[in-house]
Length: 337
Image (cartoon, rainbow, N blue to C red; front, side, top):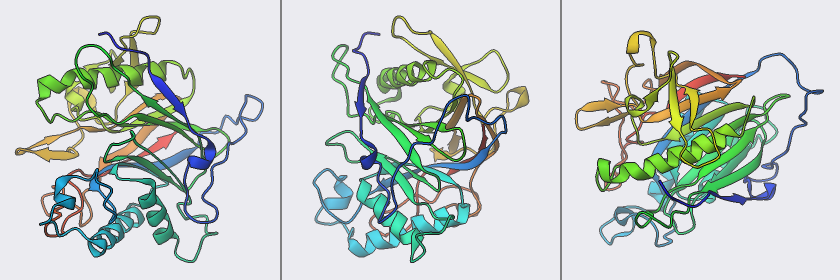
């Protein structure tokens, strides 16, 4: 596998957007002298929100949102925004990771809607960040009750082995919920559109990017999450129960990084159901991979809400009727670190 090194783009803290007055990012103090041995925890949800566009036509939207026959409108956007905020309040997690968000303006709208007139409430989600590849239609976002900081965006630039398709970068951001940060790596890997085997090379390269990033964080509390477009059964299994191996292809780096997955149960079984239902079967493509001092517990796909039908299947969003939520289920876990 030949490709250039990762391009790492550094964004100032001011670009970590949080709505209104006190959406800002801070860096917590770190260092061995200030760290407590006490374990801390937070509730984390990851959800592919399925083509979540705003009401402004920029020209990069998918065709069903901008065609002359489309029913997409400001009212449709507001209705969908309200629906997303209701899911956030219902699940009541501390940190949300979203895939397929169009832009940072949506995160402003979400934060403002959730806060209402109570911006000083400790229960508000006052912090957010967003990133996407320039010219791409959708990106990834984080929404948090706790301060965010140290945001870095890692993009892959491939110049050999065929033309690189549009791919989302890995967003690295730290959550400061206590005296030690939790490092998040937000992923949305290449879809299988165009053929599973034909696109697998790009997911392998994104796996290599993530493995390289994880290899440089010795001893940190780390969660890699998002939509990986690869079932948990298609990752290489680790030597220990509940673990998978992420492979790294660049020279001078460890060839493999072992991470834990809460999808995996004893005896080779999986958590039920999956997170994505396609052609009559469940897939488990939305992941939490923990490493370092982080561990996931109380993990499950969220099925107890109107975003899932009576059989627990996700209610995908239909732009022409304005109904549904997403074709993925949210996945939730308690992260202890």
